[in-house]
Amino acid sequence: MRSRTGVFIGNLLFAALCCCTGPFFLAIGYSAWDEDPGWGWPVAVAAAGAAITLAIPVSAIIFTRNEFPGITRRDRLKGGGFPYRDDTFVLLAPRSQQGSPQARLMRADVLEASLVRYNPDGESAFTTHVGNYTPDEFTPLIGLRLRVHDTEETDNGTDGTGDFEVTGEWRVPSVCLSAITAGRLVVLVEPAVPGARRAVTPEWPRSALLAGTRTSRLIDLEGRSAEVTRRSGRQLQQMRISREAGGVVMTGDTIDLRKLDPYTAARYAALADRYRACPEAQAPVTEPGEESRRLADQLPGDEGEFGWVGRRWSRRAGVLVRARFLEMRGRTTFQDHGPVLDTVLRIQPADGTPPFDAARRLTVPMNYLTVLHRTKEVVLVAGPNGRSYVVDWARSNLLAGVTTARVIAPDGGELPVAGRPDLIWALMNLLVSQGLSVTTPVLDLRKRRLSRVADVVTRVVRDHADPRTCA
Image 1 (cartoon, helix red, strand yellow):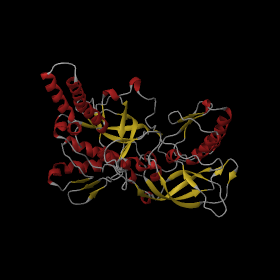
Image 2 (tube, rainbow, N blue to C red; image 1 turned 135 degrees about the vertical axis):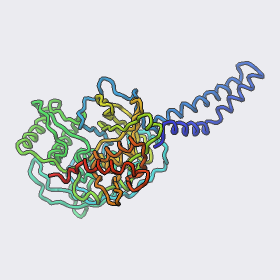
Image 3 (tube, rainbow, N blue to C red; image 1 turned 120 degrees about the horizontal axis):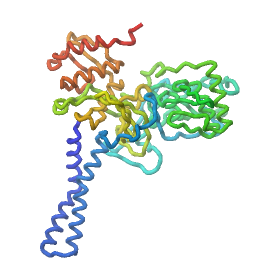
């Protein structure tokens, strides 16, 4: 992982190359003014040269802050931050096509998914577009095979026409990619036309809600709060009510019936009473068959690894810190490997002090966004003074399961660590404490430089019982 100083020097050299005429004009203007003092053209040339020269360090500082995902004291939110619970996640995504008034909202399961095309030409530079839209070159085209459930219960009973499958290619906003991995979508289905296939249009923001990426709660007319996240049947019914009402505002991740018009609130309340009498179990985090729709390996982003350890940072007692996203807001700026998002993170300092919230504009890798329904955690590299933090996407992707972690024992056997984030986190911290860099997702204890921690790693794996094997 590059240091901030290294990024700044690289940007400084690049800015100096782009603005090399500044010092040249400054020297010419100064030389001419020295020979003929006055307020003529030498001063104008020197002023232009000074302005261009000053732009070199200024642009290097701006580019470094944009490119280097550092979080400093000035990013902390004042007044205690957002009044969000720790398990809240608010996702604000681009609007989808609304379809005709006759179109119905239905659930669709993703049977297969594959990347068809993603070919932006901006390289690693930041690209900003005017207007509130997502350009096609930064929106992956995904091929999907869907099973649309046309027997969902409605206020008037069931349609009874049966399920059907549809295959097509759709542009998927990056922040909604996790809905495909989870395998649950909300689609708009147009009425059947004789001799033609029924038109199906995915509703991506609602799909992220149905998939459980965005959390969802409801406060009823009596002020009682209910958790609706991953209650897919109830959520779909709520979405239909909302669509018929022309939209319902969510404050954070919560719908407050006391703020709705009486008719819409009454419909929501009747639905809540029905599910209170017959509670609905939460849908799984991901539907069966995830391997046939896994996009993380096909999209750009950092490969997961146990992480690089800088000697100077390690000697000064640098540590790793876990943080959790509370909010993501889409913008119109993109990099090739991910969108630039306005984010809010809740950071738990390593010294045990209370967590705090920080707002930071970050480029979030697309492969991380594909698993956002499963985890919102990221790994931060904390400065020795505890005043600055840097998002480590390589470690974050390993912790999130974007890349599968592996540990090879000294005897050549493989220790079970995949899918166990707390164990992977413990191993990352162990390597940091020993000043050992492992810039791959494989921790091979047969290597000589890792032999001194082999016994400790084996003991850590043994002490972290795999919950999947517990009764």
